[in-house]
Image: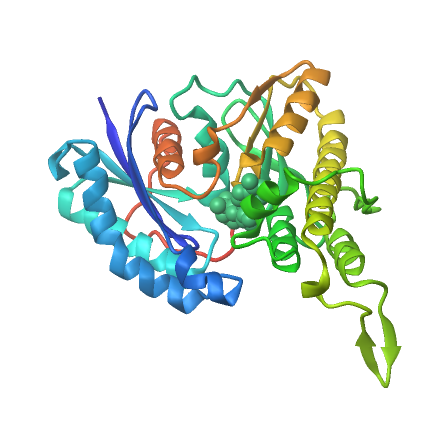
Length: 347
Ligand code: KG4
Ligand code: ZN
């Protein structure tokens, strides 16, 4: 039974996991750096790469221990090599190359965004293809068409902020906590989603837009700004807003963001032919309101819906190992020339 070690260091999660050829997760270890970046309300690249360096070896060792396996049991090492923060990616790619070379096993460079969708095969059957794939994370709001061989074509993307980025900024404005996505979702549970009518992004060119929604939330919190002596002045400070208004705004923001996601997704799905499935991944797909919306879209289109478990939506290395199996079966292996790359398109 072939075993792949996955390594993920593209952003602020240092992760290692082992997945077998039937896509069963043997171990899945994630060392989050949230505590390091919280005071800056965002990921600081220099701090992230340094933390990856310190944490990667113990994290890989924990993944082996958790699976009760040794180095010699591994058949291949897969690593997320693009896209992401370049300094962070370099740590994972260098470690993966060193392991593949010293153990004499295969090396597979994996696309992080594609891996978010391959995560839907973890502990599950293969995703029926052709499919529409939605990736909604801190850096991506992208819809792809995938053919029978998981070869993707981009159909739509955001024209400004990624949806996760909008959740993160909303989290800061609402004083909800860090990272913003899960904190806004938790806050929204106590609020009324119909209390405020926030705008849904409708880009003329199709796809998604979340930056207008973010500005509308700011104005709803602080009031309409006016210009005074060349400066923008708001009637209220963020700290002046009471808890129940914040909860209502969190719920209204989430409703508008989910509706914006639905609108762009449906437009992309409508034009696709011969679809078997809707598959989605990325941190925002762990949101229950987003998952419910996806169920409704898939059932209206009479296609299967495949979502990773909530825990496998946010960055992890099991999805990298899963992607490694899919790429290796297709004969797409890397060699020691594999490069880390901050940007890379699918397809
Ligand atoms: O996939 P991921 O872990 O990293 C990237 O590749 O970006 O996604 C992280 C993003 C963050 O913006 C985070 O706030 C968002 O996913 N997120 C959520 C939820 N959990 C994570 N957004 C909304 N609701 C959630 N429950
Ligand atoms: Zn990600």
